[in-house]
Image (cartoon, rainbow, N blue to C red; front, side, top):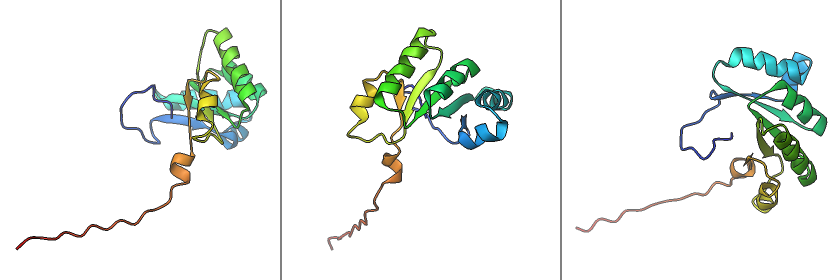
Length: 136
């Protein structure tokens, strides 16, 4: 979730995220964004897109955030340029297959924020034990 560097508590209730199944259920991306706007109240609306064509439709639909899922670096740059040519109307977030090794090159495309799912999805458990010894 794009937070603009703010330090605050966030949860799944803080904004509306529209994914491909929501778009399919609504019929179009535009219809899904409109329905989310009606239901969201003051919460932000974030829509995930998988192609430049969907990005362009999302720009016209007017969500607060557009999440670029699995976009190439070239397509990320193109999306940022298109958004900027429209007056930087929405926050653009990169998502999907971003790793700690690729995050710099993703950031250099000009996106506003980046999601790295591996920070939470690929965590290994570590067993820790602490023994206390008391002096008598």
